[in-house]
Length: 190
Image 1: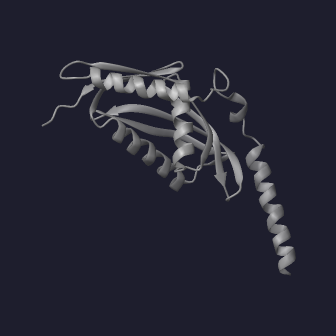
Image 2 (image 1 turned 30 degrees about the vertical axis):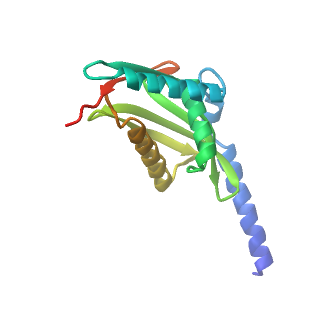
Image 3 (image 1 turned 135 degrees about the vertical axis):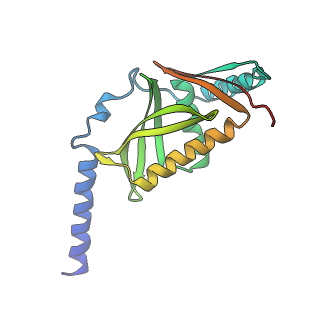
């Protein structure tokens, strides 16, 4: 078989897989966030950062502090950070809190030039005073996320959280409809 025909067949196979990945059997795209599309704004990002800094200042000694994070704030922060850092191959993220879980959708760049819809379901929990995200389900189109990509995303999220929350000891975490509450206090030096 000539190289010309081989390339032609490879292109047809890639297009067929792309068609499957973008449409066949992926009902998650139709579900979407409970409140529709979550807007991304610099204002929401700034509000979250300001609220975090205020919570950090209030958390001193035995004084507990509470941080409320909304769908819009976390979606905006992640979208803007992804744009600036380019660390993850995820675009158009949407993150919402509901029923004790965190749902994340977006587009993952696959094969260098195809974007596949992604869907991630995670929980967040308090572990030894830190906030840890555990992924329960992850799909890219109708396919499961590759283990390496899933591990990379999970590690990046948890490392980022650990770096941001290094001065706080988290004591309680609750996920409600449209928001997450984190309660904690400043870590004491040993």
